[in-house]
Length: 339
Ligand code: DHB
Image (tube, rainbow, N blue to C red; front, side):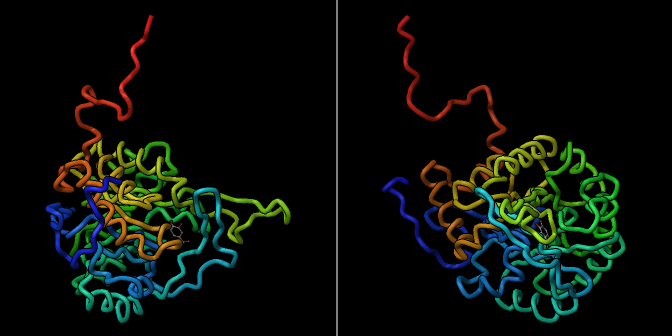
């Protein structure tokens, strides 16, 4: 890090300290900075509220909410892997009634912009969830989780099929009063084809990516580590996959806003996603080791932009797609071939 630039804590919602404009727009919605939480890693925000003011982030993204309360899968539900984390929680949650009564008002009272993630086991359930969320104070956008890997039947992963993915988005779009972002799975042959289907069905934006389906085996017990056998892989191990997905989808649909996520731990990681074409990023698994990670990423991103002489987030979104012919790799000057 350059000694010319220091990381400073700044007042909530000041979009341009150090002369750097961190604000971003997704589907016409303004956010003071592009760093969000990732769904599933901070419930509805109360735990993180012990560590920082939740309104300091661009937005809070809640754990996927379903119609009914759920206790989730049996334990063990989490496992560490090299540079990653496997989980099979099984969409544990309080259900939409408790969420609307307790969690969303808590976020609204604190001035947090809230992206509510929803999950259903049928197209109809998704539509009903969107209907229940209509007009609720604090609701900024809906993230449609069509890519949870921990469902009973892989046939239920709506995002693995363009038609089922589109059907869910159509139902949510019809019922929703706010922009709808579809969260896609990287576990497909062609993520651009799924992106096209959901955008055609009315999604205003995309969240890329959900966890990859993974598995670990305990070599002493000689059986799977997770009670659910398979689980979602997250953390730095998946970052190159996520960056690739963001890059491919942004290349195909440069006008569709993307929230990028997958293994972001630092401001420089966040910058990588912005360069690939994301207009905002979500920080997820990193909060388990460092609950301050999302606010730290805001500060580090500001520093990373300043160090590169960039004055606004808008100037770096999708920049890795530009001017490939004039690309100059970083590093020492090439040594002249003496021959
Ligand atoms: C759940 C786990 C995930 O890894 C995910 O991406 C979505 C949901 C869950 O089990 O609740």
